[in-house]
Amino acid sequence: MPATTEPQLLDDRIRRQGIIILSVFAFIWAVAGWGNLSQAPLLAMIVSALVSLLVILQGIRYASQGHRRRERVLPRSWNRWVGVVNITQIVLIAAAVFALVRTDQLIFLPPTIALIVGLHFFPLAPLFDQRQYLWTAAALCLLAIAGFVAVLTGAALEMVIAGVCVSAAVTLWTSAILIAIRN
Image (cartoon, rainbow, N blue to C red; front, side, top):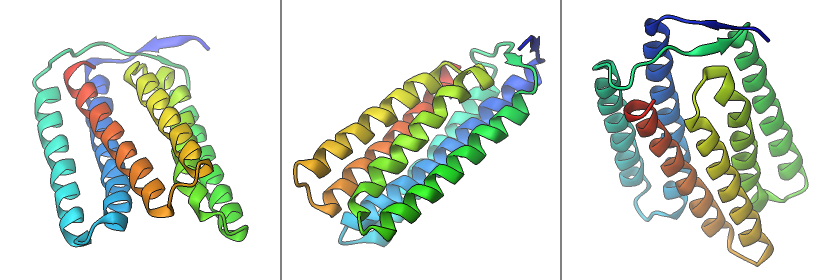
């Protein structure tokens, strides 16, 4: 695929959208993890929302100051391919949820979803020209493997959910911060 160079405005937009999307999904992972484990799920949700909001506001503020702004080299039809990757991820997650619920293997849901999400970041890295997504992909895949190991060694469902989900949230928040400060 031949590449085209996009202007600086595209870099700003991709960074802001990445920070927001990563933080929103980090919030969802955190609520799933802490809400399941916490005696005070409302408090866990509020703290998770505040962390996500802080990452979004500070990340966008920092990124908007032009720190590490750069021209991105994006593949031709990159928008279309991002859509294909995201739709594929959604279909795989839906299929996994259906299969695991149907077979009463709910304990495998968190690591399976983390693995699918992690794998989807590998093609997104070159599509967005965002190397941090390779780190995000690897981290999510590793925590999915840790989740599978925990399941296979007899960990309780609550611990698997909390461990995988909270770790995924921290991974996504960290990725959003890295995009803001390192680009």
